[in-house]
Length: 336
View 1 (cartoon, rainbow, N blue to C red):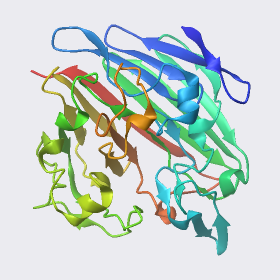
View 2: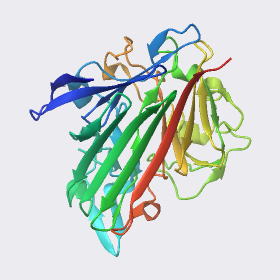
View 3: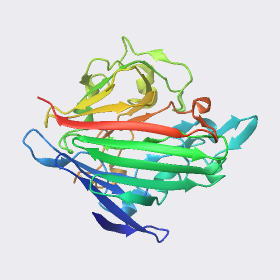
View 4: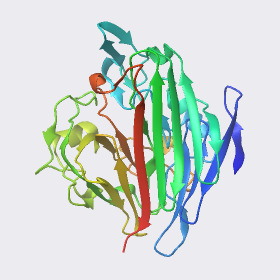
């Protein structure tokens, strides 16, 4: 089902597209490729929305901290908004102090995407980023698919370029499996990872890893997110909570979150090497009223961004003879 959602500030009509089956109801916007809602059942078989977002387009355009969107060309921060490729320095637009964050001032999250096809269980969106956009080289043709398979939401991203360029795409959905009845940091989390990339004082990840063992960053066995979030560990002080890339191991579903209140659970499968776990440290009331009928606040949602490590351009280079491909499977269920 296609429904008018609003007219963008640039005057373009934006629509919400519904995907649904017996297990999931999902609303996708052609603005930013945004996942606006994901409805699942709780332990009492009551449907509820479990992601953060808005009921109006203007809030997405003016307030949103990347709720539910596709981020690109590159997710995360690029230090000093510049990189060198083939001995040439590229200057990007900075939108995070002096750094470039999630694709820049007007990244993929702020674009109107074309709809190539839409059915009850699948939607395919496309956007072509022109050479020089936000400072990046090359024309990049990007396609993102969202597909329902029973209790799975599978999202995939594809990209091709006519010039060598960095590409590192993720989806920036914020989850709250309780539907806002409790903070997302009351969820338990498991991440099959032995290493994180620590942050510099400027929030940009380093190129070297540190072990999670005997630190607050160890989620190899599930634990409540808020158990160690106020620990005095230097990295928690820098991030003001968790905001770190985890280097994933080879477990089929290396990421899982669970809400004791509703018994809702989510496990994630991906072909990406990294998950950036962000505990919503900078969310405030300034982000306004959410579609879960709660005011935005610190820790009300968490993001689990599957991608390659931000700020490592050499690991995300796409050449003209290659295709970028990111596969991600979100499995929603009620846990006994």
